[in-house]
Image 1 (cartoon, helix red, strand yellow):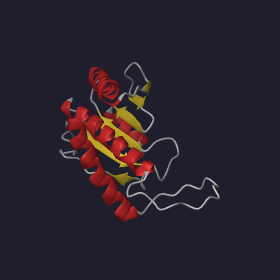
Image 2 (image 1 turned 90 degrees about the vertical axis):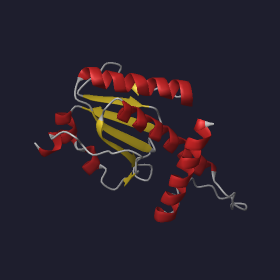
Image 3 (image 1 turned 90 degrees about the horizontal axis):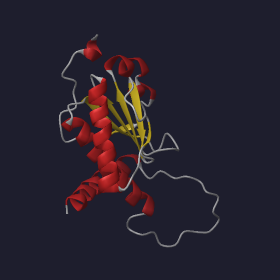
Length: 171
């Protein structure tokens, strides 16, 4: 029931993104003409499920007190994933807690297994395929500045305060 509600919320966000930015089209050199289109394409359904998963992971980061949480829709920009989640943690134990909880949610609720860093690092990466999570310590987050590098990505609004409570961005 809860997963169905999350998927419904994700459907709304995907529909808004499609209205705002249009459909993303990839050429596959298929010469067949399309038949009458369904009301929702399989790609849109995949995006909805991926967004639901990304939102669940962002909520985990928020629950474990990560700061400056960002979810970016990067599918139009890169070929290897649909969403980036970028968060700031303030210690290796906190990075470990965020990563462990995200892995648990991925495996138990979404049947997805992360590849990437098993031990916490200053920049820890969890690759779930359609969602890639970047967990940074403040200095590395400021240095690598992925939000600027992927500045054309579409930010996804989150249902909680995502602003930084500490001053690491101002230093």
